[in-house]
Length: 310
Image (cartoon, rainbow, N blue to C red; front, side, top):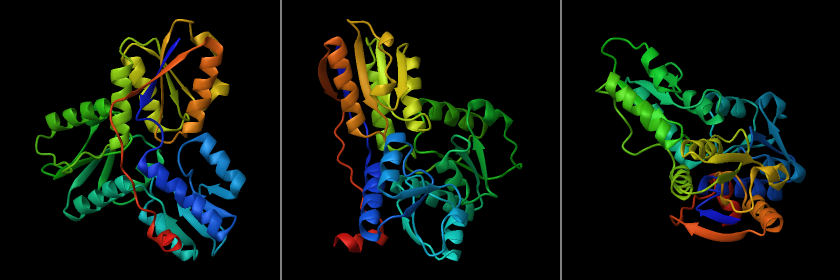
């Protein structure tokens, strides 16, 4: 077996920042530190933090008044921030800056009187937060077919935004349909899909050429990880999305397979290495790292925590 280890893979700058923030909050304030939704969409990361004293909640009514609270990397709506203030929670905002960028664009377009078309997945934490910035002005589409069904007022000013973790190809298909139907639609000056999402998708697209299997480390509720598995399928390659080595079924592989191993932006490197070790021991695999791009992006800690590290 030949293993091609994709690079870049795994944690992005936003995930690194969010995880570092929660580590620092627990170490500084002590347990429990409450987190609104999962810190990132990864089972291993969430379980690890539960053991350290993090408490993940889906409603702020579950958080005792006056407690320490961290907003996850996916961002939250203004309504959630308002409730946090009402409950006198010490809120630490670990929203990824690239998600914050989309929120600010939504606010700007809404103030300028635009109807905003958000391209994203219904129910995703990031989408809920973004739509909360301008709920009266925003419509969600998930496919080109959804664009065909849109009903907007005659002569309305339109703009589109995208969830940061989408498939680049899927987003481009929807954008193309939007531009065909609404030629005057406005768009942000820079793409909303984050650099890490694009880089990991590019790696799968390039490295899966000639591969037999693509193994993606990531959880089922991770949007960007799901996109990597789907991209492998689009390339005609069998793809599997797993949390870790315990999920590997040896019958997926033959002794002479070429296997691409990658990880979504919320999957830790430790689970990648466990899977590589498993395949090496089971199939006497060789490992080659293929680096397509170098990532050197770093995001500062939330302002609520910066003074603690000064």
